[in-house]
Amino acid sequence: QVQLAESGGGLVQAGGSLRLSCKASGRTFSSFAMAWFRQAPGKEREFVALINWSGGSTYYADSVKGRFTISRDNAKNTVYLQMNSLKFEDTAVYYCAADTSMMYGSGRPYEYRYWGQGTQVTVSS
Image (cartoon, rainbow, N blue to C red; front, side, top):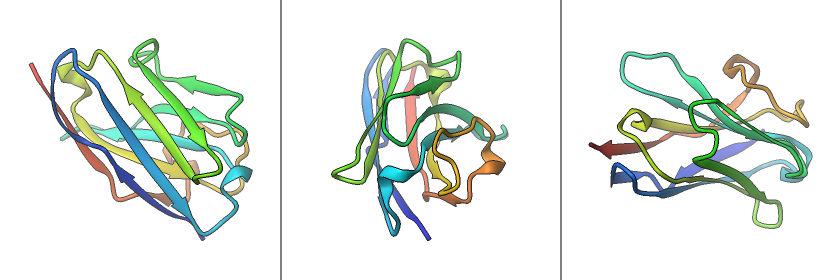
């Protein structure tokens, strides 16, 4: 069992930055990959970024590549999403996700068993 709790969302102007955090508890955090997804109103949940168990490998959706950075601190059981140069279309609820069976992660949301409650990111144009 893994519990996930996101924080750091808010309202920001286009071009601004936010850093999301997701703290995990319940299992050995350093043994599995972590991912961020987002869901805008009326749209399906979409992949944003993932990081493998050690933090040595990351992968991004094309829409955020070069603007967002995923990282993890295994000593703090926390994964981060640094979001720079935010655009109006980045507005969504952002979720962190984990599955203890995956060391390297996946971009498919149905492969993740554990989800946080989500944090709202709103970018004003």
